[in-house]
Length: 353
Image (cartoon, rainbow, N blue to C red; front, side, top):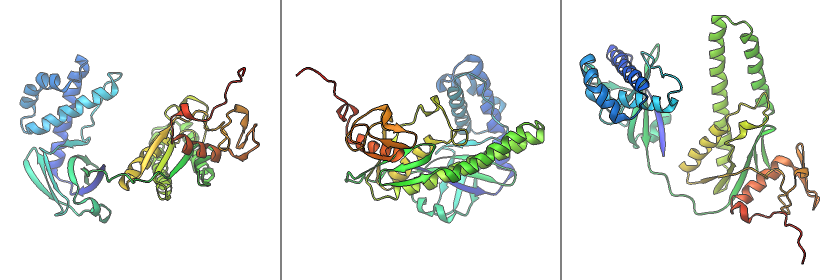
């Protein structure tokens, strides 16, 4: 399992110059790859390496290789739909050849245009638990006041807990998360905050000035951080429950249907990924369940019919069982996670005996 540690470094001219040349070299590779419609690393290296070595003679060869890899990844990600742009002081990629990070000792050595330089840092108390993990790679980000080294560390996943006690989690609009143990994370307070951001966004967009656009960007960042922080809270709430297996809905195509204006842009994929990595850290298993029919199937008798659900209420047309619709779905998710959908209770056709 991987974690990212954010380390603050003193801002120095050596790091600034390295970032400027590295990003320029990366942009040159992007320009060639975009024109040639090619993102293959081997071919990009053969076509650009010699020229880049002459043009950026002070940039070490190993850093040129990471710049080429970055350009290749950016071209591949955008699939030539538009040309990638590398900011002159964008993030710089370091690998095991170009950096050494000693988390326990509190210093690192980075390859720069001025040679291998040492930088001391103070590891935050929160990150001390990762000090013995294996360092994989790092990214250098330069801001107005400081430089930050985002270090990725790795450690083998702990053994999965042997138990099979399961909990189902239904994700939705009326309630962000409903667990099959009869607990709810309601979306009312969240809708209020999202509604405030939506109102402010509509007001600022109507102005259309440059300062208004800057304000919109700031507002977007605040909303994104609010959403991410709340997803972490929800994930902690879910994995803290005394269950060995967590069953979630696979909401890959949730955006294809109708969406709530205030909560429709909620990042359920982000919530699922946070639950997955937090659960893996403590040995719990997460399974994704195809959500079709979870809302219209009776969690008591297995009868499935569209008319079973009416808004937020579920009432089975066969056995009369009545319950909150989201809670019923969460119980079905827990049940469906135990077997293939083909073996679940279904309405059997009426045939002659």
